[in-house]
Structure formats: structure tokens, C-alpha cells
Image (tube, rainbow, N blue to C red; front, side, top):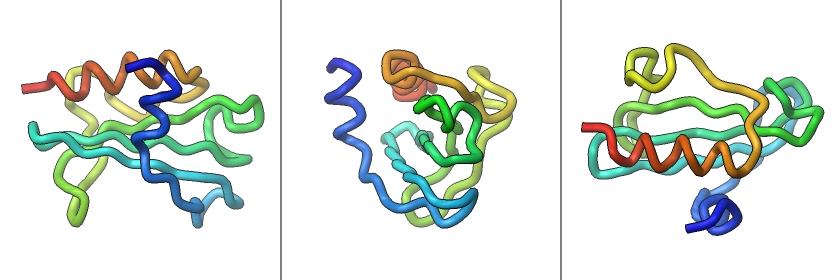
Length: 94
């Protein structure tokens, strides 16, 4: 899956915080998910870059994971390719 196909898998919705923008989320069978946002106030949003958070839970009930082993906070200033790399790693978490 290339970066553009990966981004198409996200169900983007308007982001209601941070002055507008978009948010997309994906969830995986391992209990993890990923959220990416691009808003005027997200890390990198003004440069058309993505901010990513690792999620734990499922579509109906989730939190940001600060101890996934991949990140200890949100990660900003990501290109589409970097988002894809994180998504691949999140899908493989135990």
C-alpha cells in the first residue's frame, strides 16, 4: 500500500478543535489505532504536514496511547510517507 492508498483508507471528517481542518482515524484488530490530523494549529498543519497519535481501544471507545513503544506523545510534521510508516508499525504492535 503506498502513502496515497493509505490516506484513502482513513475516514476523514472535519476536525472540530484547533480552528478546523480534518481528522482521520483507523483501528486495527490488535487493539490499536491511529489518528491523523491537519489543522491550522496542529504540529505541521500550516506546512500541509500531518500530526499523528497512536490510539488504544476501538472506534467507539479509545484513548491516546502514550506507552505504545512507538511514541510517548503525538508526533507532528509528518509527510504522507512517514504516516504510512507509522501505520505499518502500529498495525504490527502486539
